[in-house]
Image: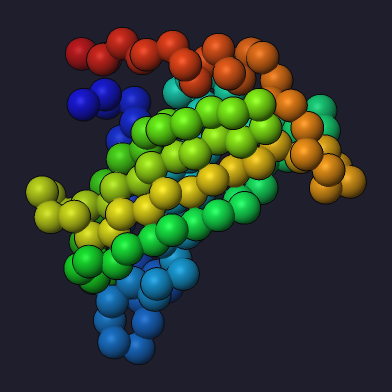
Length: 137
């Protein structure tokens, strides 16, 4: 497994619901952070592209909740690209605590312009996403 596609988060009180487990919608925020860090590890600055008029919007989210994360847990989000088209990127996230899978999700992003119209993903992003990362030692 590539070290650069892994992102760890500690669960704070603000992440939990009245039952003391992570509120289900917060997993989407955790995946967003992991995606941003994954892209950064490949030299893609999301805010820079946003300022150039390339916005990546979530258009599909398929999420399977298997086990809850709880206050104080350290969870790991593994991010992998599974498909790239001219305007979309499909990403798989696995959220786990140690070896236990908590959540599995497939998120599809569309590249849009500031007016919300689909546009082609910049070639440099495609290249950066298609090149396998070298495992850091």
